[in-house]
Image (cartoon, rainbow, N blue to C red; front, side, top):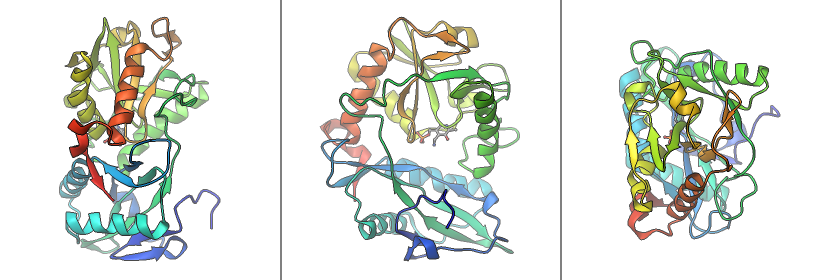
Length: 307
Ligand code: PMP
């Protein structure tokens, strides 16, 4: 088993709970043509605790998986309800009682385009959320990538396919080579697009601004939730094109995504945001999001599906 392996003991593969080390396919399988989803299940009541899990944004993630399959011409051999039961069975088989990441992967069977493999690996993760979390305030220096975000007229960024991540990894590798932690993309028009693995939001004059879906972003589930709940905090959200200089001139900037949750950014191209890091608006949003994913906000319980 490779050292990089990090799945839990069991996964669900093609209809059955399977020991992960036995979840093998031929090296000839076209996995590179596959699609996937990244989903999180959080502990009820306290994101840093232990106990019963709820899946965040199940419906939105699973609808996007089906859309990705449709656009890329992949067959989905199970129903959405069957996949939910598969995820539940997998989480139970592993006995998870802490925050868990769920990554359904679908790819066409070698030589049989009308059939697909589906595997659902899961693993634990360290959250940035929760009260006094030391991970939240870590410095994160970003650069503006010299690579543009892939665009809808070539490879649609709205599809969550492995192929799209080749674009992200070029930008991540460049950023690390240049001594930064990660990168922000411009789209093919020169407007700000998104991060390499998450969407971007900035704060200017107390208002949150985030680029539109037409700026070559993934239609992020988390971004959708943020746009829905941020006005509850008395903060306006503007979805509009953002120029590079507007980003530089922002008071705060943060990423939002399933993996990224609410990740504060210290600087872009060494231009620091505001005079406080993480900024007060980012903190407020992260706290509210922590409460939402852990089920503490009644109004947003509809974003949660019990395991
Ligand atoms: N953009 C990219 C490129 C991503 O990989 C992700 C993570 N899925 C996101 C945005 C955030 O999307 P979501 O909130 O649906 O996880």
